[in-house]
Image 1 (cartoon, rainbow, N blue to C red):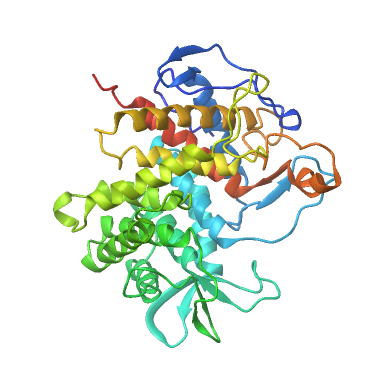
Image 2: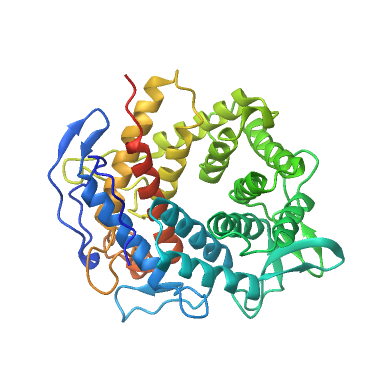
Length: 415
């Protein structure tokens, strides 16, 4: 199976950092551009191909992903299974399919979606017409009461709508609407959300998720694209507007990549459909972008290409790259200097992620938790045991970052 694209554009950077137990590829010949060091399209194309192949191969006949492995078999992994990350993996497989249709991707998505609907999609007791993605005792919630997470509904809806766009009538439109109704049921009047719902306790406000509101907004917008009920769009607008208002004027804001991804999707709609103060969303996007750029550790001569976090973990870099790519479609064109800084940061992030990806062998395409181990001290022992761990969301976010950057690089350069 291949998800290799046909474009041939010189883009992105491949740094010299190597991940020993991942057997990363050697650096490619570099060129220079205003966005930083570049690699050939072939190197990025191979990374996308490999990441997609890894996820497809990890879906079993029942539709369940091989959720977590360790590249070093002697190191045990936890058996927990997270249905939100299952949904996220379906979502990125849809991105891969839309980039380059392939029957193996579609079959894997279909099996994984059927598993999610069979094992996790269900009604909300006492609430007519509402459906949720449940974290259940028997699936991934051992020792805890059954609960429905806002993020599960958001990502579950985004995943199922993604497949529906590719293969219509895979899901019932009423099932999709049921998930959207649950999201609106979890939304307060001011646009904020409850993060969890318990069978025995209802909506719970003791814990607040950073990412669930953006995921919920994304799911609602994607449903609106195929089922243009104003209620779905209104809920998404309230959510994003609330995030922007509550962070307005703050010098430091959370690094919320899902809000950037949802904002990009919102701005792609027909402007006549959307009643929102666009400038507030644009300012919020710029705030998050600046936070990402400020938080990056500086490169050094020894390690010119580094993670966006000091410990070398891959997923924080990947999610930030996803957010930065989305932000370029939200931040006004007039913000030329900021946009150039963003583009350079994206190139650096992609360089790091390509260097970290497993280049060959049975786990080709896997993205491990970190590009390497920290110094062997007692404080770093737990981190080092997990450095070679691979989880489906690590691969998901890296693959999405690669695909997003490829699409960005394919756009005609401004004159």
